[in-house]
Structure formats: C-alpha cells, structure tokens
Length: 87
Image (cartoon, rainbow, N blue to C red; front, top):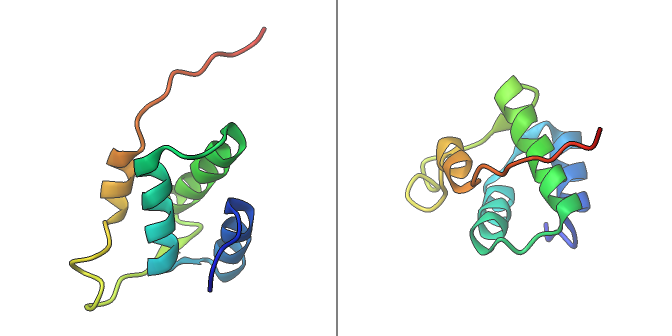
C-alpha cells in the first residue's frame, strides 16, 4: 500500500493496530530528511507515543531484520525539540 500523506499512514496504522515494515520505512525517511510540517510532526509524535504506550504493535519478520530500523532506532532519529508553550 502506498501512502499519499501522513494522515493516510496514521489512519492505516491506527485501524490495523500494527506498524508494518513499509510504514516504518516511510517514518524513517521523513525523520531523516526532516521533510515534514508541524502538523505532520505532531502526527508522528502521536504514533510514537501510541507505540510506547503499547496501543500499537511494531512488526518485524526475519526478512526485515537487516533493512528496517528498530523502534529504538526510530526514537533516536527523532531529535528532541524544545517546546514553547503560550500562557
């Protein structure tokens, strides 16, 4: 399945409850290239949060072991950002 937008990717992942290898590659590419808007960044943050909480599962099979980063690697790619809160 091809994803036309982060929103479509998010919807597919959330509906299935599973982050497949293609979705991991798309997220990795976005994070490495830093080619995302603020809204897309928020969507990626929601996906990563849902994985950390156990609401979404991350799949891996033996054919993917050398090609796709682990979830921990994805978290390391996600550079911490300072947040500014309006009062």
